Length: 102
Image (cartoon, rainbow, N blue to C red; front, side, top):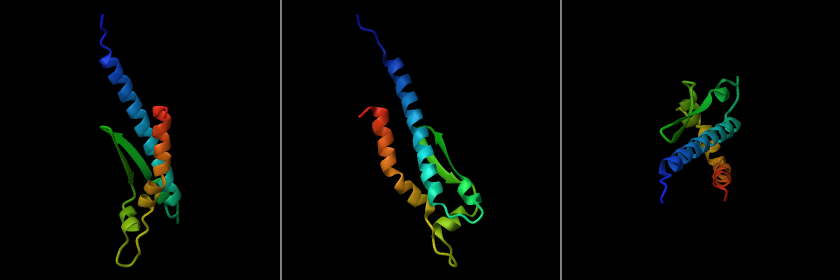
């Protein structure tokens, strides 16, 4: 007799995906914090992430963060978020390998 375990598999898969996305968000934010320029520490502490609908959003809540990241006509860009995201790539691959058991 065949037992349909599709819903159980789907529930476990969704839980694994949610856990993995949370680990990814946390890791990327830590990498971004390392790259964030510090004058008062406010910009560094304003880095955060959210997981919504199987997407990870990395952001900074300070209104001046885009000016630091992209620069202005008076200030050269300091792409701390891009650097942090790029530097976390290898760690993200490690997370997926660990979670997949590869």
